[in-house]
Length: 51
Image 1 (spheres, rainbow, N blue to C red):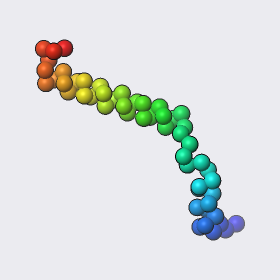
Image 2 (cartoon, one colour):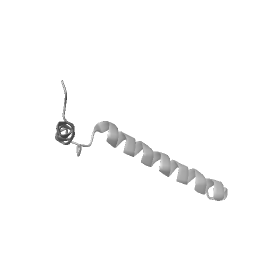
Image 3 (cartoon, one colour):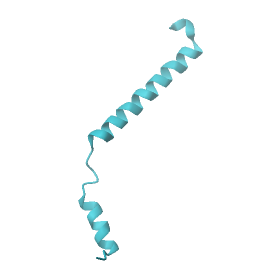
């Protein structure tokens, strides 16, 4: 069975590339939490009396 490259591209676009999955959303949330934690620790390192 041979597939043409045009068929593969069409199949790719039909799969719903714009859908947001739960795993993708969780990854974005976790990266955001990691960035906020790193910023918090960096500020605490620069000005420890504040914390």
